[in-house]
Structure formats: structure tokens, C-alpha cells
Length: 285
Image 1: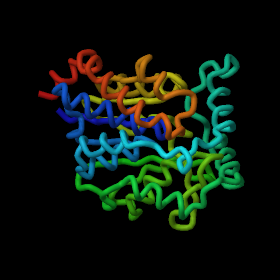
Image 2: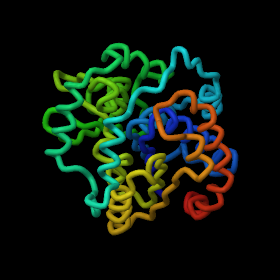
Image 3: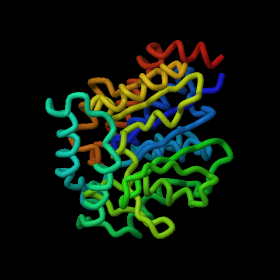
């Protein structure tokens, strides 16, 4: 059976939680890393690129548990980003799904104008350090981003002519926090601004498993994507952080101090998740 693994955005703690979860699921006999398609958005683009290029899960998990030097790695201010997601959850936004292209273009304008603590080159170096392998894998990997100028949605793959680290950096360019990434003369921002999962990209696959660190924060777009996939004939399973994982992740997904705890929470949650997605195990046989 052809199946897709969708890895959603969720910042530094999202990378950690997803890594712990995938490692724990493998230990429980549900190895999702052999997916026919991996879709990565923001944090999910990092984990997706790591997994698709064959970096061992044990190595990735060990990296997440390394001590954090809080004097060097500090949590950035995510005030404007929090306001954006709060607006999406407000009663007046009932029925809010993915932002329109016009809204994305407005956010893109804000992203280009924002003063960030890191320069574009330094940010790219940080992303490259997270990717042990810098070339696109043979297997199908899709990385999402948004053009800051016109709000258009972009999906990078190995045929796009864009280096893998650049594609991942663009997908991780959180507006108001990190600078947009320049590719072929245009500037791109985090694909999670359109949707924290962009699971609709996996249309056409018989089984789609969505791992969504922020699925409970902005649920409407995810619900819409699940409905679209199901209507098109896909069987869909969604994994969200459990209560213990949410406590470990905390209020700021970009807080590096919470990385080890988030990874451990993902590993612990996998024991239960392996049972709740037992149908996935059956379908993958």
C-alpha cells in the first residue's frame, strides 16, 4: 500500500517531539520512516529531510537530548506570531481555514520588513547544521514554503533545482522571528503560515498519517485537510501531542530549553500512539 507521512510544523520543540515519537514508534514495531512520500512543513521539513536522507533515528534522537546552553540558545520573542494564531482561534474566526493568498502576501510583507536577530546567512548555517546530508534523497520528499511577495504556495522537491538546505530553511523561516530565505531572487517564508501541516499535498495516497505538533492550536485547517483527503478516498490518521507532551513543549515552541523534554515526551507517547494507530500497522503489512 502506498502511504504518505505528513510532518507538521512546531518549532524547535516540534522537531524534538516528532523525533522522539518516530523513534518510539519504531521501537514499538511501527516504523513510519519508509513512507512512499514524506511531506515536511517547517519543523517537519527538518525531520522529513533527516529521515528521507537516511539519518538513523537513534542518532537524531540522541541529538535532541543534548544539554542546552541557554546562554547561547535563547527563546526568541514570538509575540506577533502568537497574535496571528490567536486570531485564527478567536470566535470571530469561526470556520477559519487556510489564509487566503492576499493574507499570506500581507504576512510576507511583514516578514520582509521585520527586524530579526539573525541574518539570513546565519540562519541558513543553523539549518544546514541540523541536516547531516545536504542533497535531495531519491525517495519522494516535499518541502513547503510561501512566497512573501505574492503569497503563493510553493512545494519544493528534488526536481525544483533548489538545494535541500535552502528549501528546508525557507520552510522554517518563521515570519517576525527569522528572515525570509532568498531563492532565485525571490524571498520565501515558513510553509506553516498557510497550514501547519499542508496535508492536502499528500492527496492521492491510499493512507496518510499526519503528525501535527500544533494540530490542537490551529485545528480548523487540519480538519479541512483531513476531510479533503478522506473525500478523495484516503484513509487518514492524525497524531497530536498528548497532555504530557504539551506540558513538555510549553507555550513557546521555539524555546530550545524545552527540547530534551519534548523529545522524551514524544518517545513516551509513542507507546500509546502505537496502539491507537494499530490499524496503520495492519494496513502497512
